[in-house]
Length: 130
Image (cartoon, rainbow, N blue to C red; front, side, top):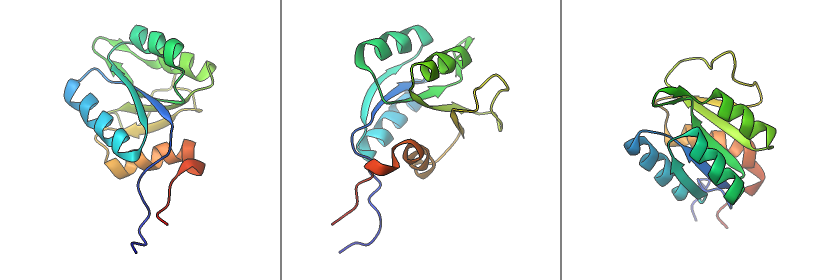
């Protein structure tokens, strides 16, 4: 029997908002491997809002710098809809306008760091090996 914890979460629907295809694919794969249901990825705030209205995700993973626009307003919109938000950026500290209610990951980050950030919002859903 393996005593190491299983790095999977059960059930959260995670919206991925990322404009770089390779990064979006890596995030999608990592989240799927954790057991999350991935929605998207999408590359714009408008697409994120449409998908949020249509699919009602539990959590959003949002790159703060999408193409030529900032996603801070999207983060605020998601938080007002009572979604848990994990914001991502290459900057060492989050922008001032980012709500303190949002979690923050500095790129690049590891799969373990992503897993821990997801668990901050969905810890009770973590599966353990029998």
